[in-house]
Image 1 (spheres, rainbow, N blue to C red):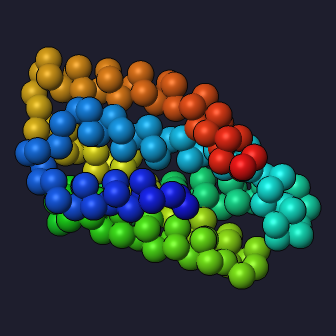
Image 2 (image 1 turned 180 degrees about the horizontal axis):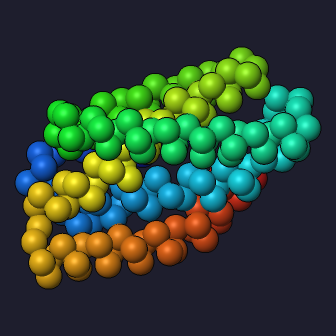
Length: 171
């Protein structure tokens, strides 16, 4: 979440209405979200070194991420039902962006853990908002094709995320 492409993704989604989101755009957003998990695992030694914590403590960043993500799925599902998917997605991306900014400037490991929780909570909106928006936009065969494309991207994203994490942390 430390790259400029993250903020460009936020801007792109904010400018899109529900009707203008194409499967290719959704695919790009899902790849971005899923690759974060794999790249985070490859950066554990760098996190441990940067914050002077053990490898086990650095692994807590993934634990708190998944716990907060799970809670976020529950919250954003409720929020999509109450306010609609577009406002919920925009709010979730805002929460995610704030969590990323906090992580970028975290002065210590405790703040980093908090930042990871905030970003995960916001990122969870993609698991609820995206399928809801697709269901609102497409029907029958188009919907099946869209979900098939996203499923293929999800299958490849851990490999791509791990490779990107290695490249980013080595330079």
